[in-house]
Length: 120
Image 1 (cartoon, rainbow, N blue to C red):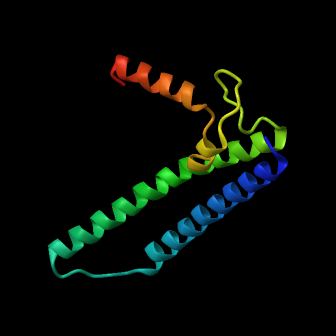
Image 2: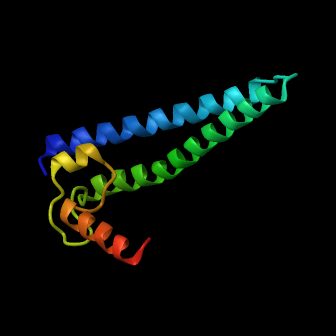
Image 3: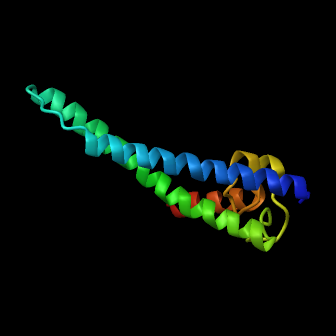
């Protein structure tokens, strides 16, 4: 991969990481600063549902943080953009769509086909 591309992905991944961390901090602030009393049980249920949804999003982002850090480690050790299955280069277009990916499109398609056969 071209060094310019590697630097692009390093900046992209670091930006993603900073955005996720900022959202997490904002969520913590919102949930700790807000003390609301609801007279209507429906309003309370809606607020609790919104809070649960936000927490599920943050949990998904927490898992994404791990993948981002692993991708940054691969950049540092020079293996970023190499498929872990076949060793071929992952296309830049695929990396732009999913910067944390570890599989080329061919291996990912095969993995998904295998999962469909097993019913996962």
